[in-house]
Length: 165
Length: 416
Image: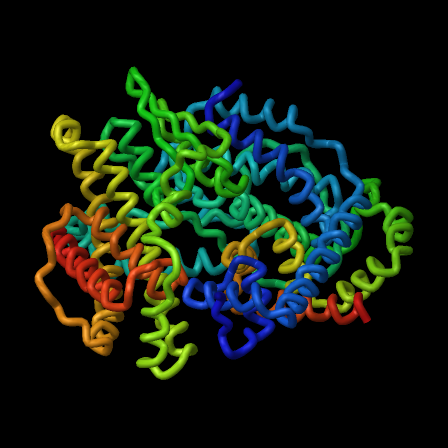
C-alpha cells in the first residue's frame, strides 16, 4: 500500500482505464497507443497531485489530458502520413463483434445516427453517457455549456425519433 | 393539493431537468409540473428512454474494442513506485513546464512567439526596471495541464496512420492554482478544502477529529464522482483519512423539513397571496425565488451552526494564528452569503406583507442567533410558498411571518 495519492491514482486507473481507452480508440487512436496515452495521463495526474497541486475533478482532468494526447497523436500521424509498415497493429475494434451487435435493429438505427453526427457531437454524447455533467463536458471539449445542452438535446430527440418511429 | 403551473415546460427544460442541470429557479416549478402532468411525464419518460438506448448502444460497441493488454494496473503501480522513490519535482518547475509543452505544433509556435514577445518587452524595459519588479509578479498563477509531454520513460511506440483530424480544437485543461494548506492543523486544512468544494453545504460529509491530531472525513452515500473529488482534494493533507460509511439516519439535515411543521391544514396564506398578486403564475414564480433563497440561507445557517459546535469559543481561542485566520475566513464566507440571501428574502417578502396589510407590532423576545432565526423563517416560508401544512389562521400566519422576518433581520444585523 502506497501513499494516499498513490492509492487514489491506482483506484482511479482501475475505474477509468477501459472508458478512457475506448474513448481514445473511438477518436481513431490504435488500441496500444490508446493504452499508453491513458497510462501516461495517470502518471501525470500522480505527479501533479504529488507536487501539491489542486485537481478539482480528476475524472474530467484525466479525460481532458488523454483527449489532448489522442488528438496530438492523431495530428502527428496526419503530418507524417501513412501507416508504419514495420508495426503490425492489432485492429482496435473487432469488426465482426461490432457487426454482430448491430444486428439488433435498435442499436443499428442508433449506429446510423452516430455515423451521421459530427465528431464533437459524438464525443458529447459519449462523455454524457460516462456520467459527466454539462460543465465537465464543456471543459473537456472546449465549448460552452449551452453548446453541450444544444447538442445533447438534438441528439436525444433524434434518437427518440428514429428508434421509436 | 399540488399546484400546476399553467404552461408545459419546453422540451429543452425537460431534458435539463432529467439531467439534473436545470437551474434552481425553475427546478421546483418543473418538478411539480411533471409530477402532476401526464403529458409532460410521458415526454420525460421518452427522453429518458432515448438516453437509455444510447447508453446501451455505447456499452455494446465498447465491448467490441480490442484491449491491447499492454498496460495493466500492475504496470502502472510499478511506475508509480519508481516515481515515489524519486525526489518530487521542484514545484516552480512543475508549474512552468507544461506551459512549454511542444507536443502540439500550433501551440508550440504560439508559445515561442509569446516568449519572443516577452523577451523583447523585457529588454526594452531595461535592467533597472527588472530589479525593482516584485518577484511575485512573475509567479505563474495557473497551470496548463493539457497533453503534456511526458517525462516518464515509456516504450517507443510509432503511431500508425489515423483518420484525419475532424476536429482540430485542442482544449487546454486548466487546473486551478494550488491553494496553500493553512497552518499545520490537518483539521482546519480539511475544513478549508471541504469548504472550497462546497462539501460543507448540506452534503453527508462529517469530519471527526481523532486523538493525536489525525482527522477522519466520513462520506455517507455520496455519488462516486463526488467522493473521488473529495478524496483527491484531501489526499495531500497529512493525517487526514477519508472513509465511506452507510447513511446515518440521525443526520439532522434529512429531517429538518419534516420536523418543523406547525400542524395540519393550511393554504390560507397562499390563497390570500394569490388573490392579491393577480394569479397563481405570479405566486409560483415569486414563491420559487423565495424558496431558492431560503434553501441557500438554510445551508449556510447549518454550516455556521456546525462550525460553532465543532469550534466553541474556548477551542477557537486555543487555535494557532494561521488556523484561526483560516477558520474565520470560512465563517466570513458563510456569513456573507447568509446576509445576501437573507436580505433577498426580506426584499421579496416585505412587499407581500405590506400587500396583506400586516402591521408590524412588537416582536417578542426570541432565542438569538442566525440558526434559530433561519429555521423559523424556513418554517414559515415553506408554509406560505412551499405547500407545507399548517393549521394557523391567516392572521396568525401573518403575525408569524412578520415576527420571523424581524428575528432574521436582527440576526443578520448582528453578523454585520
